[in-house]
Length: 303
Image (cartoon, rainbow, N blue to C red; front, side, top):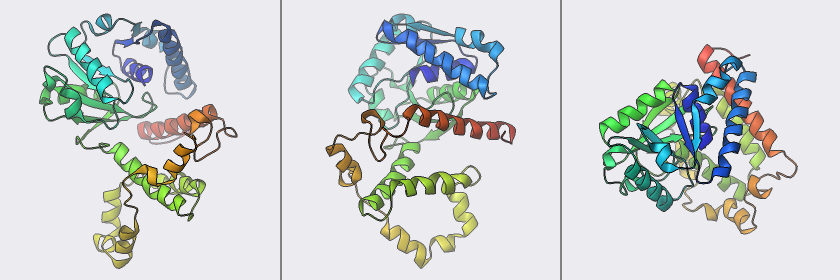
């Protein structure tokens, strides 16, 4: 994520320093940025002639002090661990200029709790980039209880200036993106656990069906279109009453798979058998589909 965010900012014209805790990780990170840029060129979303200029705006260092020196905005993208993030943010604050905006790309950790480790929590707010960060245009902006209007406004300005669409979200578990993602997974995992449907059927419903109209119509727009009387009908009430309310993923097939050591792509098997599917090919096709949507959003048409 760190490299993807660095590339996203550099594509938007910003000068970036990418920090790594170990020097040996920096060259591979730069290589990945280069490959990602070449992929954008191949899809018509970047200019080959600008490659050196864009990648030249990304410096690398394993010195945290060098990384944050003179910077007005610093964002961390380390593991989703509250203590680790708080420790790193406190270090960054001690090394940064007064007034530097500090941020995190966490997908679920509380902004209020993260900023509690800072001497000046007003300078902090979350900027949650979704993977792949250099392709997905939406970024959630989440202020904590002590975030200043300046921190939120400046973070929003930087995101907009680098081609992102920031959305202000509440500091609640999962914000908005992960929250709806978990809601969908909870319902489908419950149905799979009851033996009513397969993971393949659920994913097909999402990708081929539901997702095909989402770019044109959100949940509340659809409710208004259908009519709120229909949403409140006996049939709809029966659906709402039947939806899963399980509060622990371990009580679904997710827990069963974990007990078997099946963690998904990283272990070779989860809901799918990734020994028979190429994870890298899956990611490539995912990125191509996201790019197709980006093109539609930018130009109003797809190739």
